[in-house]
Length: 434
Image: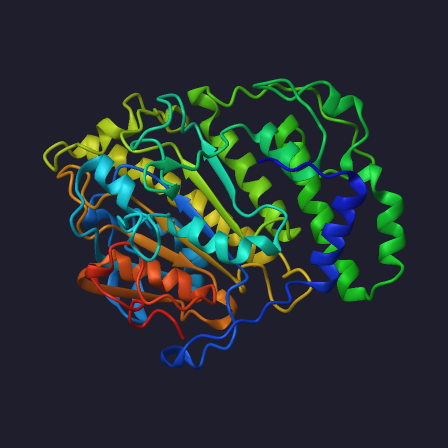
């Protein structure tokens, strides 16, 4: 159920996040005694249709590793120190597009399994979401043209019960920030005619800023800048407006149009960052398209759909090169998200938003051409409040991905020994958590 709040409640929520900060400090069991704090938040970032491993894999291993020139992950180089790249993670018992999509975050748990068939984000949200206004913020980028089914949905509240992502930034904006009511598919003129959310609460913020120290004022300023960026991304205005900047020209956003895929995705990530930094939620996800995604990356000059490109054989060098280019574009989006989180101060705490978060780049298959779920690529990012050892490339052999899902739970302060199908192994991945 969507809960709307007025401007006063929003200010108080933001103030609490900025000044008081998250108060929860959870402890894990003896196996991770050195990690005395839990990550403050978790983010799932999904892109579809598997990979081509020889163009994805870094070189080296452990702490001595790098991204080859021209590789899919090379755009992550600027944020490499924040990453853990995982290789050799298998979805045991799952295959093909639908099977991989269903198993990816659930570990194929049943209603009778300890995780009750939930996806890991919803399982975590059930444990920590009560402390947030929004238990989980579930965002999509053109996920729903084919309706809700096992190809288009990755989040589950129970076996067969999907948690649909919201594909429309304007809807997400309303959910986060109140009663703005733009028309479906576009930003209504109301968003230009009305005073901005920031202007409406300026008096209360002045009062708040007069009662906090310099560090808290700096963090509030960062929140205000993030919210302003959200507003301008939705209306097509500049990303760094000044106080003298006039309202931007009204621009419609058809969130279903193929050519708007990049812009909708960026708006959704901006909204997600605002929600996280303001303390509205501790659990968020962004789902770029869906498995078997037909989207054409026209902004890269391509004319074939992403799914078709994912099936190009090695003999079709031009086709593989286009797929690699599309995957590098996804890597750029992930790098942008990680870079922004690394710039944003932790609300009411030390370090940055990224230092205290765990971000997961997930896929539903390994080699998309083989339709298998073996050696499915995963990238983790963030310090998880000191719980994760970053700047490493970890190579496993036939590691059940259920243990990765346990790792995410443990990073969030939980102590469940298994996740999904308990027969696939217990405990977190070795060498990931501190």
